Image (tube, rainbow, N blue to C red; front, side, top):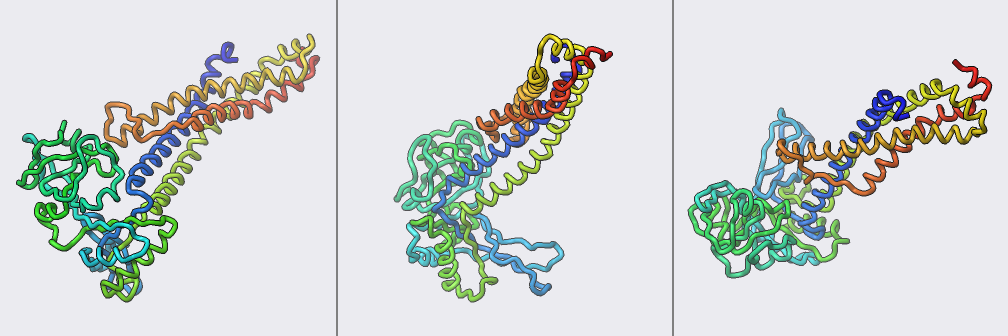
Length: 415
């Protein structure tokens, strides 16, 4: 059929190609995004919780509020649900007293307060505004899983020493090396370590928290932008979060939940929520893409019906010389399955390029293909092949059945 009716067959195949390509590219990008998200959030660890300061309270409309919304690492509170509401944003920093309170909770292994802000960084004549994060070198090892590309981590006693994220070292400043000097806000620091690429910490420079308080202008002497806690038993995460909230509310003199001026984030719960959202969107888009497969299936059915009409006389001849119904059925099912297979191969190839194009758009590199946010699993590729063949055979089943039931005498008389 592909040989004798080339144009019609190719037009039929295009429908399958488009459908398979759309499904492959959408699923590959969604799976890639999910894996990248798991990698970035996984670097925090399921056993690490983050306490952030800040909340937003709406006033002027009774009963309308957003309570307990935490700010990010650099501060900031929650947000009003509508711009027309008169809001009062209050920001209360976490302090050393909070760290002491958290250390007294049974399931908590380590506590580390951090400060962070952006600062001007100069290296070999090139300047950039980089995120600076002050950490406690004594316990930093409990909170980071990022390996070193070169050098060492910060240790107790370090003052003017820094560890640099991979993107800062290799992209923002091309070719940073350990033991070189860097100027941050007019002060000189020595690079003692460069981290491997991790996603979340690639664009950050780490320094001892005491030094960061001297370098960063908007950081208080006894305040933290966030506090990270490492827990012993992950199974007790919910109970630990409840205990953290209870202890901090008591320490801060907060009596009601709606007045809470901090938030506790759980990376595992956040990851599950985001992944669920990604999967829902991917499923919706894949369902839309599947419409192209339905159109392609209709095209195959139409082509097979036309082929049965065109080859009615040949069917009669085959039956007259001994061909059985099942032989005719298999011939037409093979032809329809072959149309689906060819469409599937073309669709997978086009889907791979389509996913690369989407990846380049996501990375802002429009001039070249990028597969950094894509993942082509064996199940996806194998499933695409199988679906294309099944769609072809299912679409050709009725025409093939009708062809097998033709009576030899009637088929030979057909003009």
